[in-house]
Length: 582
Image 1 (cartoon, one colour):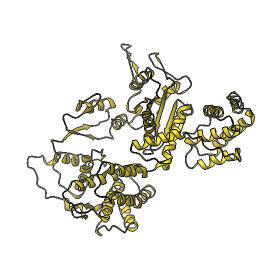
Image 2 (cartoon, one colour):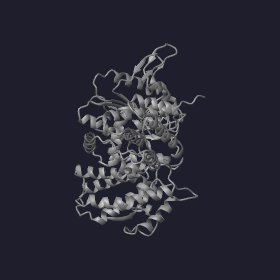
Image 3 (tube, helix red, strand yellow):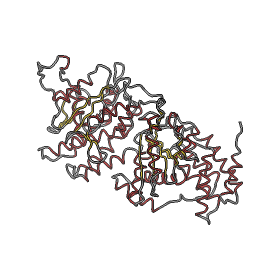
Image 4 (cartoon, one colour):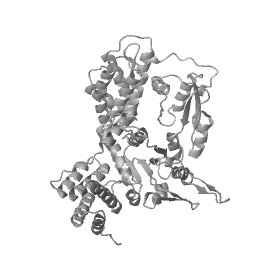
């Protein structure tokens, strides 16, 4: 196997970019990349190969031409630092910056800042109702810088890290400045490979166009000079990503099975929104720029501030004290609760911190709105806010904790809570999960107080009868709160635990003049196309491309046996992803 001489290649390219001390700088460049390979942690998205070298050298050349008075080593140091920093994880960043400082001692070249762009991004961020966090603004600017030198970019980060908001904010920035941007997002894992790129019918030899090929062809035919992005929101799968290799490399051509060749025009970009690159080959990783968003870059606090801002903006607050009271509660309770659940307790499945905070905000919103719309005009005190918050926090964080015959993590959470927080007193009998916050009495009441005497309908089959218990009342309470808000709900439990019966009983008591319920049962052979047809069948076309339930009804889709469809080669199943994208 022939190994390329990286040092010589780098030297020649530096000379081509106009550097005079190319040999010394090339040696430093290659030394840095070799040390990064050895000293930094092994990450799927790290690439220290020739394509990465070339991209940095292009950036260095443009920096040199734009800063003719700057020393050459300072120019290269800035290019190496600014181009690689976006993909370095938090733990590796001090090591990387230390290597830069060792190889380029006594150099303090500040990061090249586009102040005008940063101000535009801040305006767009506020316009979208988001928070102008420095880390967030930096990620948006870094994405724009990557688009300037790479036509394919991976935004890599966990669920809830802010990947979607980063590119949407940059898109909105272009929109506010009349640059006529175009962006179409799709989930490549929600459809089959043939549906994505097209297929030739073996019997008739007729060509059926694919989703991606249609989008790319339509974008290539757009004549305006604004940025055009195809956003692929879904984890990398070798089954479809290998078909894009010719688009992602310097050819910039999509070759279809029909022998059609669709070019990627100079204003078009491919943007991949992913959570990991475990199944991607090194050849795929090297073809794109990487913007890595660490979980700690943004966290959950900006989301909370945006939610509190939206309540003030929409005039939903109960009183002037609502925002400060809730802000204190978020700071006091949420962080410790998330820490204990992530380190010492077990959940039914992996749930990101932002999902818990989402649930907390949903519960708070439903109960605060109920209080605002009630006839109870008593002042909502600081103690009332804290009691209500504790109830919502217990269920938002502890509701997904695992419990079986061997271990009860809810019981462990109860013990920790009682020892940790003593300001709000739960009743001493039972656990914190045995009580709810009553808006009427303004105190904790047992769930058993919501039980009503059971009267059996003689016309109803015996197997469909549900005798209310504390557990069924508890589940239906939260389901009702979330459905009234229009939020999706996933009810998880073993076979035969009564999930379907609880939901059917709740649907029977919904207002039939407001809600329509559509039952969808999954099985092993359910496909994404079948699911799409079932979802669309109950809707009617409104204005433009919009579909909605008939009249003014609200639609509830009840998906039964979500775990049944056949898993694809690289999970999750197509039907589940199609549902998520829908």
